[in-house]
Image 1 (cartoon, helix red, strand yellow):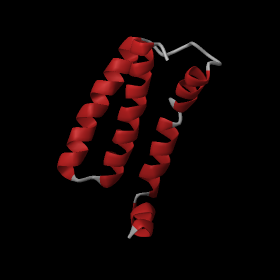
Image 2 (spheres, one colour):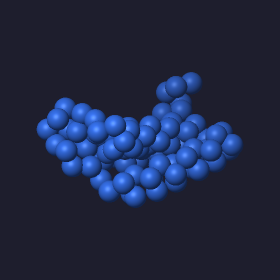
Image 3 (cartoon, rainbow, N blue to C red):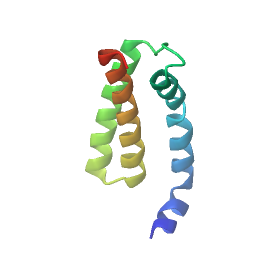
Length: 88
């Protein structure tokens, strides 16, 4: 079943990996202390809100790839927001 899910949604998973890998270097470098630069707060808040709506829609429609993707994005933006609020 997992193999079929991966095969049927391979383009979605590739897109998910590419999109979410763009925020991970910022999160990791900030947590490791090698960089203090974060994206603008407005950008994080807008992406966070947009992903919340996308996630709700994906859950409503039962779109597994989008639920996984939007959950990852939602929590990575939540991590960036937490770094802003608590200073990492």
